[in-house]
Image (cartoon, rainbow, N blue to C red; front, side, top):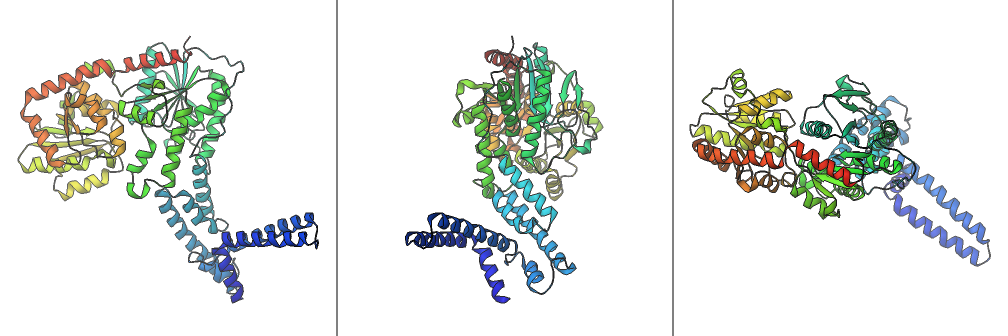
Length: 566
């Protein structure tokens, strides 16, 4: 039995080499016998086929029973005289399966998808969670990489409704109040004001089950938001959700008869739109609001994630859908340059920057009331932001700058309104620096309260880290601050430099430099003329280039160019 165990161990570890060597040897032997006339050529081919089949079966068994460091309990259960069905054997397998899932999760987080799948394979037959995780990871892998299998563009008689636009998005109001969903709603509201007929459809499963909102369609300010299988968890993973979206959005398009499909980041929405658009013969616009692969890199250890399998596959899929779309919309010149670098004709790229409603330029949200409600003295300098609290936003730099200013005797408060993955880390930093009475993090608020919070700020700070995603992508909230006349201090990164007109509409400071940030804030506080000049330039820039009404005109011009508005 020990000899059998050693043989199975060897086969399990060297199955590829054994298969190749045996197949080559068997083929040579069969060919030699045929050449000498000992057997016929058909018999030789049949012998080779049966040999490979038998060896493959044996290697499959060896793979299941491979006796490496991860499956010691399987070995003991099989070769120790026990049965796989004994309680001790199954408990050992379950324990090692859990360890394998943990290792696979780590590999997956690092972007090593195939390695994570391989880690789970020996346990998939014995552990449902390992099998589900394996299938989920394989599903995502199929949904990434170069885009294949698009149908030919249909030439059949599909009769669209002129000016009707179907927007494909990941999530939406009213269940999620973030920059992505706010931008979607501002776009469709402005498009309706420009005489277009916009509809929105969300990706399968939205709203999530926890929202307890599974209505197939909901109107927000008169805009229809359609849902694909709301609240459903479609298993095993992303590819199955894409397949479900293609089926259901095709059916929805037949009912609504849109003249154009307008997909917003990321690639999954564009993939669905391209499949549906090609099948129905209608154009597809892909709106790039960010670069998913760069956002993913910023969320973990970029040194281990960059260049990983998942990183490459994300870039390949995003690049594929960019090239296949009939037109591309993006937010900033920095992003346009990156998209063109990926092989998209610059003539097909339209800018529609983050913007505000024209009314906001005349609005007077009650910032004083917000300050009073949160115990902030009217004479205190309030600096901060209204934002999702992610690591790359760099609010740790702001907290460090606040420590500098507080230590110098400046009467300041830091106001960070919002929630996110970095919130706990920020609270720990605040406690460590003894700034509990200086920094205020009230959490997530609604849209009206967010505007009041914006108006409560004396200085809007955008201390983004020097990450590629931050160098490329412009945020929305600073545009609102510029419209409200709030001075902006931001990291000197290309996207923010573009937003602040090379420093004429705000102050730029080196990223990740708390002392420089503190110095810039102090300079603004002590120089009312500088504040006046910057806020005047900022409001003029917003009025000239960053209103949703102007963006709606750009969208309408684009749709007319595609021939879908008349």
